Length: 113
Length: 115
Image (cartoon, rainbow over all chains, first blue to last red; front, side):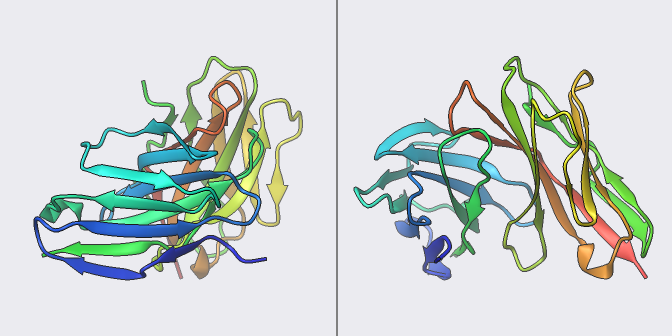
Protein backbone atom coordinates (compact mmCIF):
# COMPACT_ATOMS: atom_id res chain seq x y z
CA UNK A 1 0.00 0.00 0.00
CA UNK A 2 1.35 3.41 -0.94
CA UNK A 3 2.19 5.82 1.86
CA UNK A 4 1.54 9.52 2.03
CA UNK A 5 3.09 11.25 -0.95
CA UNK A 6 4.04 14.89 -1.31
CA UNK A 7 5.16 16.94 -4.27
CA UNK A 8 7.39 18.57 -5.08
CA UNK A 9 10.30 17.40 -2.94
CA UNK A 10 12.00 20.75 -3.16
CA UNK A 11 10.64 24.12 -4.16
CA UNK A 12 12.57 27.33 -4.60
CA UNK A 13 10.67 30.59 -4.85
CA UNK A 14 11.44 34.25 -4.55
CA UNK A 15 9.89 36.61 -2.05
CA UNK A 16 6.41 37.72 -3.03
CA UNK A 17 5.66 34.70 -5.20
CA UNK A 18 3.10 32.00 -4.53
CA UNK A 19 3.85 28.37 -3.70
CA UNK A 20 1.60 25.36 -4.11
CA UNK A 21 2.36 22.13 -2.29
CA UNK A 22 0.48 18.89 -2.84
CA UNK A 23 -0.29 15.87 -0.72
CA UNK A 24 -1.92 12.52 -1.39
CA UNK A 25 -3.06 10.62 1.70
CA UNK A 26 -3.03 6.90 2.26
CA UNK A 27 -5.99 5.27 0.57
CA UNK A 28 -8.99 5.29 2.89
CA UNK A 29 -7.75 8.17 5.03
CA UNK A 30 -10.10 11.13 5.04
CA UNK A 31 -8.13 13.46 7.30
CA UNK A 32 -5.15 15.43 6.05
CA UNK A 33 -2.94 17.65 8.21
CA UNK A 34 -0.33 20.20 7.24
CA UNK A 35 2.59 21.22 9.44
CA UNK A 36 5.42 23.70 9.06
CA UNK A 37 8.80 22.82 10.47
CA UNK A 38 11.38 25.55 10.34
CA UNK A 39 15.02 24.47 10.57
CA UNK A 40 15.81 23.00 13.98
CA UNK A 41 12.34 23.65 15.35
CA UNK A 42 9.30 21.58 16.16
CA UNK A 43 6.14 21.00 14.19
CA UNK A 44 3.83 23.98 13.87
CA UNK A 45 0.28 22.96 13.06
CA UNK A 46 -1.02 24.70 9.95
CA UNK A 47 -4.27 23.16 8.73
CA UNK A 48 -6.48 20.13 9.16
CA UNK A 49 -8.91 18.93 6.52
CA UNK A 50 -11.44 16.19 6.89
CA UNK A 51 -14.05 15.07 4.37
CA UNK A 52 -13.33 18.07 2.21
CA UNK A 53 -13.80 20.66 4.94
CA UNK A 54 -11.30 22.75 6.86
CA UNK A 55 -11.68 21.62 10.47
CA UNK A 56 -9.07 23.73 12.15
CA UNK A 57 -6.15 26.00 11.41
CA UNK A 58 -3.13 26.99 13.41
CA UNK A 59 -1.86 30.44 14.23
CA UNK A 60 -0.79 31.39 10.72
CA UNK A 61 -1.78 34.38 8.57
CA UNK A 62 -4.51 34.04 5.92
CA UNK A 63 -1.95 33.89 3.13
CA UNK A 64 -1.57 30.24 4.17
CA UNK A 65 -4.56 28.44 2.75
CA UNK A 66 -5.47 25.15 1.26
CA UNK A 67 -8.16 22.79 0.22
CA UNK A 68 -9.03 19.14 0.12
CA UNK A 69 -10.33 17.54 -3.02
CA UNK A 70 -13.07 14.89 -3.36
CA UNK A 71 -10.40 12.17 -3.59
CA UNK A 72 -9.05 13.47 -0.22
CA UNK A 73 -5.80 14.75 -1.68
CA UNK A 74 -4.89 18.21 -0.52
CA UNK A 75 -3.15 21.34 -1.60
CA UNK A 76 -1.41 23.96 0.51
CA UNK A 77 -1.04 27.42 -0.96
CA UNK A 78 1.23 30.09 0.42
CA UNK A 79 0.77 33.54 -1.09
CA UNK A 80 3.07 36.55 -0.93
CA UNK A 81 6.00 34.42 0.20
CA UNK A 82 8.30 35.79 2.86
CA UNK A 83 11.82 34.68 3.71
CA UNK A 84 10.66 33.18 7.00
CA UNK A 85 8.33 30.82 5.13
CA UNK A 86 11.41 28.76 4.26
CA UNK A 87 10.80 25.46 6.00
CA UNK A 88 9.98 21.79 5.63
CA UNK A 89 6.25 21.36 5.07
CA UNK A 90 4.95 18.03 6.24
CA UNK A 91 1.66 16.48 5.31
CA UNK A 92 0.09 13.66 7.32
CA UNK A 93 -3.03 11.58 6.98
CA UNK A 94 -5.01 9.51 9.42
CA UNK A 95 -8.05 7.37 9.92
CA UNK A 96 -10.85 8.66 12.15
CA UNK A 97 -10.53 7.85 15.83
CA UNK A 98 -8.33 8.68 18.77
CA UNK A 99 -6.30 5.51 18.52
CA UNK A 100 -5.04 6.02 15.00
CA UNK A 101 -1.63 7.50 14.44
CA UNK A 102 -0.80 9.99 11.74
CA UNK A 103 1.21 8.80 8.79
CA UNK A 104 3.59 11.41 7.45
CA UNK A 105 4.81 12.12 3.97
CA UNK A 106 8.46 12.87 3.21
CA UNK A 107 7.84 16.61 3.17
CA UNK A 108 8.38 19.48 0.77
CA UNK A 109 11.40 21.67 1.42
CA UNK A 110 10.42 25.23 0.52
CA UNK A 111 13.19 27.78 0.13
CA UNK A 112 12.31 31.43 -0.30
CA UNK A 113 15.09 33.68 -1.59
CA UNK B 1 -2.14 26.13 28.13
CA UNK B 2 0.07 23.83 26.14
CA UNK B 3 -1.55 20.51 25.37
CA UNK B 4 1.80 18.70 25.20
CA UNK B 5 4.93 19.74 27.06
CA UNK B 6 8.39 18.34 26.45
CA UNK B 7 10.81 20.04 28.82
CA UNK B 8 14.06 18.51 27.56
CA UNK B 9 15.27 20.32 24.43
CA UNK B 10 18.33 18.06 24.23
CA UNK B 11 19.44 14.81 25.82
CA UNK B 12 22.61 12.75 25.66
CA UNK B 13 22.91 9.04 26.37
CA UNK B 14 25.75 6.57 26.23
CA UNK B 15 25.38 3.77 23.72
CA UNK B 16 23.72 0.67 25.23
CA UNK B 17 22.30 2.68 28.13
CA UNK B 18 18.59 3.40 28.68
CA UNK B 19 17.15 6.89 28.38
CA UNK B 20 13.84 8.48 29.35
CA UNK B 21 12.30 11.31 27.36
CA UNK B 22 9.71 13.29 29.28
CA UNK B 23 6.25 14.25 28.12
CA UNK B 24 3.36 15.73 30.04
CA UNK B 25 -0.06 16.46 28.62
CA UNK B 26 -3.09 18.53 29.44
CA UNK B 27 -6.62 17.37 28.75
CA UNK B 28 -9.97 17.22 30.49
CA UNK B 29 -11.13 14.49 28.18
CA UNK B 30 -11.28 10.96 29.59
CA UNK B 31 -10.67 9.36 26.23
CA UNK B 32 -7.47 10.18 24.44
CA UNK B 33 -4.47 8.67 22.74
CA UNK B 34 -0.78 9.39 23.23
CA UNK B 35 1.87 8.89 20.56
CA UNK B 36 5.60 9.15 20.15
CA UNK B 37 7.33 9.90 16.86
CA UNK B 38 10.98 9.87 15.84
CA UNK B 39 12.42 12.27 13.29
CA UNK B 40 15.94 11.46 12.07
CA UNK B 41 18.03 14.10 10.35
CA UNK B 42 16.60 12.95 7.01
CA UNK B 43 13.30 14.56 8.04
CA UNK B 44 10.77 11.74 7.86
CA UNK B 45 8.46 11.28 10.86
CA UNK B 46 8.37 7.70 12.12
CA UNK B 47 5.63 6.47 14.43
CA UNK B 48 7.06 4.62 17.42
CA UNK B 49 4.43 3.79 20.01
CA UNK B 50 0.83 4.42 21.08
CA UNK B 51 -0.89 4.43 24.48
CA UNK B 52 -4.64 4.72 24.92
CA UNK B 53 -6.01 6.47 27.98
CA UNK B 54 -7.95 3.37 29.03
CA UNK B 55 -5.05 0.98 28.54
CA UNK B 56 -4.01 -0.39 31.93
CA UNK B 57 -0.70 -1.77 30.74
CA UNK B 58 2.14 0.42 29.58
CA UNK B 59 2.69 0.10 25.84
CA UNK B 60 5.84 -1.57 24.60
CA UNK B 61 7.29 -1.89 21.10
CA UNK B 62 10.65 -3.59 20.98
CA UNK B 63 13.17 -1.33 22.72
CA UNK B 64 10.54 1.39 23.20
CA UNK B 65 8.20 1.53 26.15
CA UNK B 66 5.83 4.21 27.30
CA UNK B 67 5.74 4.95 31.02
CA UNK B 68 2.11 6.06 31.35
CA UNK B 69 1.17 7.75 34.63
CA UNK B 70 -2.39 8.90 34.18
CA UNK B 71 -2.81 10.73 37.47
CA UNK B 72 0.33 12.75 36.78
CA UNK B 73 -0.62 13.18 33.12
CA UNK B 74 2.74 12.00 31.95
CA UNK B 75 3.68 9.73 29.07
CA UNK B 76 7.42 9.32 29.10
CA UNK B 77 9.22 7.37 26.39
CA UNK B 78 11.85 4.91 27.55
CA UNK B 79 14.42 3.69 25.05
CA UNK B 80 16.41 0.72 26.28
CA UNK B 81 19.85 -0.30 25.05
CA UNK B 82 20.38 2.89 23.04
CA UNK B 83 21.93 2.60 19.60
CA UNK B 84 23.71 5.19 17.49
CA UNK B 85 20.76 5.11 15.10
CA UNK B 86 18.50 6.37 17.88
CA UNK B 87 20.02 9.84 17.55
CA UNK B 88 17.09 11.94 16.33
CA UNK B 89 14.35 14.33 17.37
CA UNK B 90 11.54 12.76 19.35
CA UNK B 91 8.04 14.20 19.47
CA UNK B 92 5.22 13.40 21.86
CA UNK B 93 1.67 13.87 20.57
CA UNK B 94 -1.91 13.55 21.79
CA UNK B 95 -5.27 13.07 20.20
CA UNK B 96 -8.47 13.67 22.14
CA UNK B 97 -11.73 11.93 21.37
CA UNK B 98 -13.70 15.10 22.08
CA UNK B 99 -11.90 17.05 19.33
CA UNK B 100 -12.09 14.21 16.86
CA UNK B 101 -9.02 14.10 14.71
CA UNK B 102 -7.07 17.05 16.05
CA UNK B 103 -3.48 16.16 16.89
CA UNK B 104 -1.29 18.11 19.31
CA UNK B 105 2.50 17.85 19.18
CA UNK B 106 5.16 18.83 21.68
CA UNK B 107 8.23 20.86 20.78
CA UNK B 108 10.44 17.80 20.66
CA UNK B 109 13.56 16.48 22.35
CA UNK B 110 16.82 16.06 20.48
CA UNK B 111 18.51 12.82 21.52
CA UNK B 112 22.18 12.21 20.85
CA UNK B 113 23.64 8.76 21.45
CA UNK B 114 27.34 8.86 22.32
CA UNK B 115 29.53 5.92 21.29
